[in-house]
Image 1 (tube, rainbow, N blue to C red):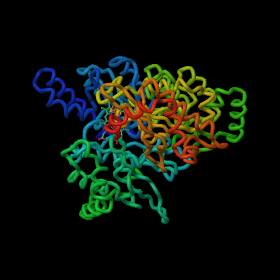
Image 2: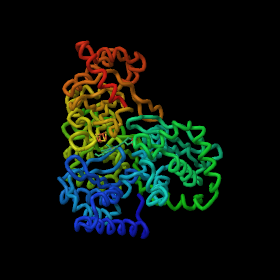
Image 3: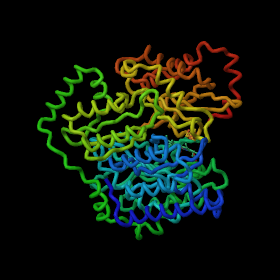
Image 4: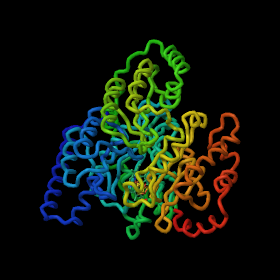
Length: 570
Ligand code: HEM
Ligand code: SF4
């Protein structure tokens, strides 16, 4: 894991002190609320529906046990004893006191953490695969590249006030677990025939009210040019992005307006000026960063195949353990080791929420079983990346006691869900109670039988809950002051990313769980052996699903709903 050097530490300490001073001047009446606003946003401090919200950065989702313990401690002393992990691998505190936020930021600095650039129109937290460095299907560890981008983008003076926020994701694996096509810039680490590392660069992806998948900007960018090329992309965007309309200000709109060929031409023209200049990254710098992510001291597991057999025997004896093994234990580069998801998706708890006690337990589990480190996944779960196979049963027992072992990774109840109307001031509708109502319809038995199936919820068209790329997406819409929900079908994350299609008029809150159940039933009744929901949908087309969703509803109702839905359809 990356450890701060003296420069990094000074940077976060100075920023904490500066923010403390700004807040003190505000509280003394010397700095107006309007003047404080851009300053607090640069430190992740929002004002939400019920009060302040602080978004803490977790760079590319990497977290040490010490840091997680500190977060637990902070939620106890300054908040209501819990936090919310987001799809962008950050942590949100929903109930801090406004005047206490500088103290929180000061304490974060003591464990090499901060809230810098978690808000505002700047380069946000870089995200990546939660299995980075241990995934059997990756070409190399993407984290040194994420760290390089973090260092380049932090306080980059030219890109502090972009037309709009800017999100970069890096993936290095065969399966795209970072969703690179839904980011302003998506980077795929690849190796050319000569063995040189470089990036396939995508641009102009994003969800939100105008969802667009990224387009290829460069087929192979040698890694030494990564920063100069990103600089060129951001310069073109900074110069030509729409500052007149917040809804049209993301880079995706610029790329769409210019066409990717013209955008590429402008980037290359800009890049030509300084492509071999001081931003060129020498191999030694990559080596220096990679040293921070050197593999931990793995122990030899004498008989990995035998251990696997023993786990299968235990799984056959105990169905609950078997389900956990099947869903929450993932492949690892090193024989005898596995990566493990600690699920934050227990029915009845807001997806991604974790309380202080669980944070302490998870930190302890990381220390006992996984070299003291954890990751946050964009699906809003925690991951222990380096667990020895013989220790899995013991880990499972301890995680289960803390309600961190729900065996649902990738299943229907592993829903991505934004805070919605319960907390967010931009919401059209609540999302957490809808997620819970859906989760309650499905027993463990049934969802395990269903297999991979994503159902995601966003409380408004900003799409923080990734509903566009779920098999079944649920979007809160406001209709004459009431909460309604629009359903999309057929979205896919990953390399084959696809945006779902709206199935028709929206539904009342109390109808949503029924509709999801009906959609799933069409799959259950028609699936061929081994078919997942997405496969059945692709084979049958959406008509039978659509018809079932609206079966039994009066035609007049559907007609009446059309105009308002059209207005809300992103
Ligand atoms: C509660 C406070 C939040 C506010 C005010 C907020 C606001 C927004 C807004 C305005 C957008 C659309 C931006 C645009 O298209 O220009 C957006 C996008 C997004 N947010 Fe949030 N968000 C919040 C919380 C979250 C949470 C909790 C998550 C993760 C669970 C999240 C993840 C995302 C993602 C993934 C996108 C879409 C990707 C994109 O930027 O195009 N946000 N958010
Ligand atoms: S999708 Fe809308 S309601 Fe949900 S967190 Fe984002 S802005 Fe808020």
